[in-house]
Image (cartoon, rainbow over all chains, first blue to last red; front, side):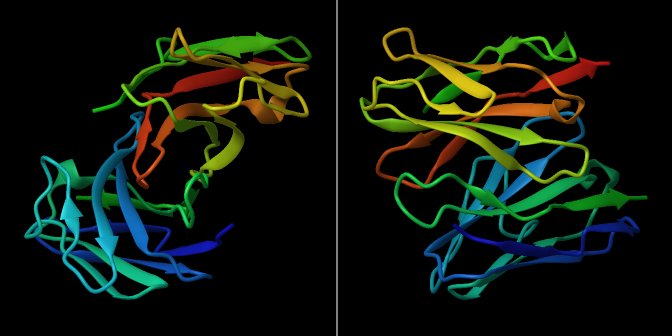
Length: 114
Length: 114
């Protein structure tokens, strides 16, 4: 299993600014995942973060908008850059430590852009 | 790519009654994993139940059970003796066998009436 601490839990930001979300896992994991969940919607994978290499982004998401860092096997950050109201969402960090494991999630960051 | 479909955006059940949430998926793989997650208003994603595709026996966890029909690519969740605390969004999820990639359905909002 894995316990994930994600912060901040919520924030209200001005448009044009950036917010960095932190994700700390209590065990070493190879891959960490960042999801976006727009209001009333399902989870959409933004990118997969591997330690020591560039993150892999899904279609529709780009590194300039969502830069990701993965400095070690227990920590990752997601930055939402140059925010607009359309970026208002819940952002979730997730890991799946071993083959067949369920996904474990952080508590999510509720971002509101005004 | 795999797709997961939940055709019931919202459902209601009377307390103590039984409700079944539907999920279908599309895949060309023979081995994979399926999950049901619950997301209450707290935003925390909570694993409800999991099923390995190679197991014919349907998974059961207390009041929660699944009806896994591999040939039909169907994975429904049955909640027995529904409780007020079961009210939440429920997401069906598919995990590929060899990779850590998850695919989520669009979710079903479950209301429990006292």
